[in-house]
Length: 416
Ligand code: EPZ
Image 1 (cartoon, protein in one colour):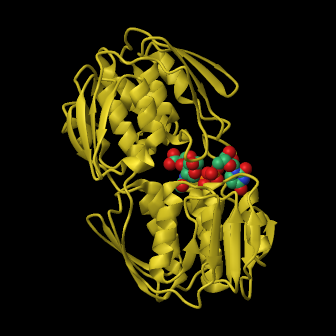
Image 2 (cartoon, helix red, strand yellow; image 1 turned 90 degrees about the vertical axis):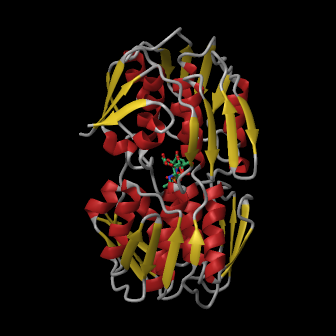
Image 3 (tube, helix red, strand yellow; image 1 turned 30 degrees about the horizontal axis):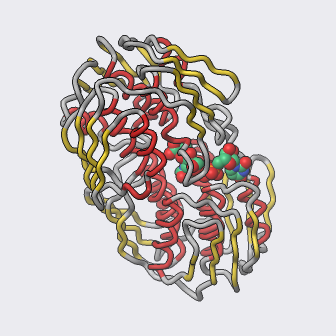
């Protein structure tokens, strides 16, 4: 397991250019198989999860080339329709390839993705929606086998505004026969980025960002050149890193319009924030104020992915904050590690009561999943003394060169 060594106490101040959004680039890479063409994707972050997705594409017979943050996918000679168990287990979000592979090949065989550290991660909504589109699906021996001579448009209602299920439907229906509607669709900005990419390919998708998305099936799509949106969760994580250390930071290449709920909470905690079209300036208070209650909700509510980095903020804020995790059933694994650093947190079910302490102290801690690992980085930057974070492979799934970004802003951080 890789380690990050952080000596806390330095203010994180300076400028960071925000990376491309992991959760936008993954479904967009899946969309490249919808056409026997070549797509060029800019602002594609160098992440473990993107590398895994490149492996999925190569396993399907596509060629993938990366030059810095530009990835070119040539799906002309796509031959396969299978994603192996190892890749599915390593990266369960590959399930979003299902709709795209069936749309291109008429069939798909993927291993059940299984759960992950933050929850069981069922895919019942995905499968129910794909069946509504006329896809025949059998689940046996841990594999999902799908086939459809032609995908037929349908009216689909999602019982929960699932991001992945919404994306799977969009990918499967983009070249279906007829019209598809999704009610109670997810509204996340990454859905809009996928829809914009598909429309650039020649699809006819409307309503992204609202709860009603309509998709009129196109006869064919073409390869395109596209630039991925900025990563709003990574942006908010760096704002948290600066806020907890009393720093002053400017994020470039950001989109503050995607971040209202998070910026509102930072303001409540005492940060002074100014936004331009693609920049965010933040001046931190001497000491953060607690936030009465933070409830994670589907977009545009407070994002579950930033719950743990913002809980790190609350551990040293003045007062008591309550976090309620409504999206995933096991997303408090960072709590034990923050308590090892001197935090005062009591978890009951989906609620965590965080009583702010004067200061945290450095310790040996373990990252058990991506965003919990980011929370430990945020906490370590403000802690007294040295923190050693084990499990950097989790953090590298979503944060591009995290130690380089923080070191350039004055943090005392290195990787071993
Ligand atoms: C996406 O996961 C993101 N991942 C997650 O980010 C993010 O936390 C999540 O959306 C919510 O915003 C990617 O985009 C790759 P969901 P996804 O389907 O699509 C339940 C990160 O850290 N559900 O909206 O899996 C599910 O159990 C990751 O970057 C069903 O019950 O999220 C969960 O409770 C973590 N049945 C809730 O819905 C289903 O068929 C939200 O899941 C599907 C989901």
